[in-house]
Length: 201
Length: 147
Image (cartoon, rainbow over all chains, first blue to last red; front, top):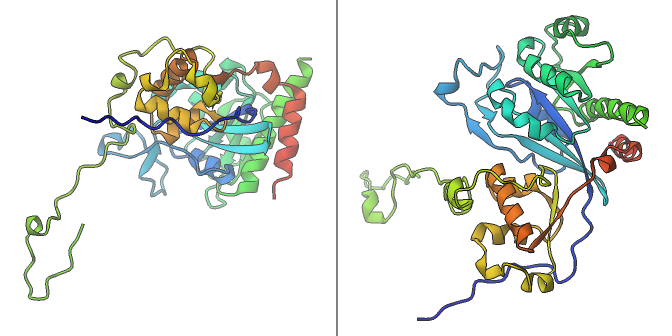
């Protein structure tokens, strides 16, 4: 009987390139608010995600907004990345929205610069868990209200009032499908992080 | 899989053509091998290397260094070899997990094993580095340059 050696893993006679510094931002929010869309709009890689068909079991528990044809939901997490330069890479992690995935948030938030809470203004209660979490974790966060097709069910002031977030927390509207709009939303979070970092010095 | 209708109006039985028209079971995509997570980690669920986070960068060690590693390549599982293959270029734990369709928890344990075996380098990053104002400014400027 002959045996064939398994091929050696390819690659690397020389040391691999120096790894980039990873910078992490969490994108959180309730079910179906557009987290995966937002990550996908800005990521240079197709967002790597674990979506699963919404089963009948989820109907009634995971209720997408009134006008949606959403049939999949992120069951683990999805993420994308943006290479800033050779030595710096921005990672965006979409946190699963459902409260039952709360146990994953510690791992996601650890070491993160800040968080973007994505909100559907017609279903505000979906984001309470995320807002609560980041307040308690003392992580800088901003609230981005996703304008589904340019529609906002409630004004930004009403959203701010309903969420009862501190005045220092930015609340703004953005379009999760537009790359530049998502970029601006991420910039808001980064500016909060920068503020904190410079004050901490 | 649908077949073109037979010109004479009858359909050749699927088993005669060697094709199965019956719905195929969905391929198990949990992992390259389709094994359950606890098999891949030999039953371990805890004991993850605390240095290993989602965004932690992993690189395979040079071939020469790996030859003399504590655990030789021959002693590795297919999943672990796949990780080494992927990490010729620096890659984050999250990307490894997604590309190999391994559970995140499983990936962390396997990467930890490979590190202990001397097959990969895990690049731990001081939080101070990524939270340094200068680093953040570089990210901001990089994003602003987007068009």
